[in-house]
Structures are given as C-alpha cells and as structure tokens.
Image (cartoon, rainbow, N blue to C red):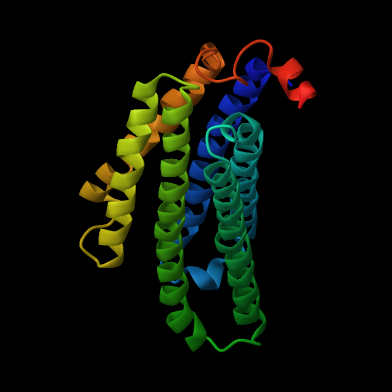
Length: 238
C-alpha cells in the first residue's frame, strides 16, 4: 500500500471514529437523561443498541488507524509505535464494555422490571449508579485517548510525517485533556459540559485538522524513508 493511500484511509478513519463516537454518545445520553429511564429502556432498546454499534465502529476505526500507521511510525520509535497500537486496542475494549455491554445490561434490567422478575425499587437504586458509571466511562475513555494521542503526536513530531505545527497542536491538546480528566476525577471540573469542555477543544481540533491534511496533502515525503513515493519498494526490500 502506498503512503498516499495509507494517508487517505487514515484520514477517513479519523473522521469516521469522531463522527461515530459523537453519534453513540448522543444516542446513549438521550436515554440516560430521561427521568427513571430504566423503566422505559426496553422501549429505547434500539437507540441503545445502535449507540453501542456506533461506539464499536469508532473503536475499530481507532485500531485501524494505529495498525496502518505502525509501519510508518516504527522507524522513528518501535516501542512507542507498538505502545500506540496497544493503547488503541485498549480503547476499543473500553468502548465495547461501556457502550455495548452496559446498555445490554440496562435493557435486561428494564425487561425484568416489566415482567416482574426484578423488584421496582431496583430502578431507583441502579438507575443513578448506571448513569454515574456512564459519566465515569467517558472520563476514562478521554484519559486513555489523551495518552494515546500524546504518543501519536510525539511520533508525528519526530518523524515529520506531517507539518510540525500539526504535531505541536496534538502535543498541547492531549496533555491538556489529560489534566482535565484528572481534575474531573477529583470533581474539580467536568470535561463533558461547561468550562470543562475547554479541555477537549485542542485535542478535538488536532483530530479534525490532521485527517483533513492527510486527505488533502498526504504524508510529507522528506525526513522519513517510508513516507516517499518509493515506500512500496523500500518495504519490499525489507
């Protein structure tokens, strides 16, 4: 696969994972915001299931990004490139757990409430717990993403596969997100609303500009042996 085609696919995957995650979060939170939502989850099974599928799509996309970038990032630092792949796999596992397994559990509880196998008081006790678990899940996902994004930004800066100002945006944005997540865990701020959203902004800008650049320009051909037009021949020789 040529580096230009790789850049195009990576750019599309970045946009796919962003859009899919936003849709998944909107579908799930739309259910969680309803009062005593567990009693009606059986009716909302389709939005929850669809949200889970979008979340899995997002997770698969981020793993695909890491796998496709690995051959280009490996010459710069193989341990960091491998760490980036592992981090993205962890992110996929977390998205499956939080956005697919937990909603299925909610649906099962709701069905139990409807047919009488689960006591009605359970809805009042478990409802807030599951909602709090979802809020914590978002923070954990952002925390994991901040670590992986920082690794990617470091590798892009050192390899010069993209202009360094783009990499610098990631080097600034993801540590800011990391700090925001830590502050959220100590209940100093909330990264999902209000002023806490400022912690997400720089990293989100990086994840928007980078794929647009890759789709329009591809990878830089200088400063990296695998980024040029002769990449297929070089890989073949190895």
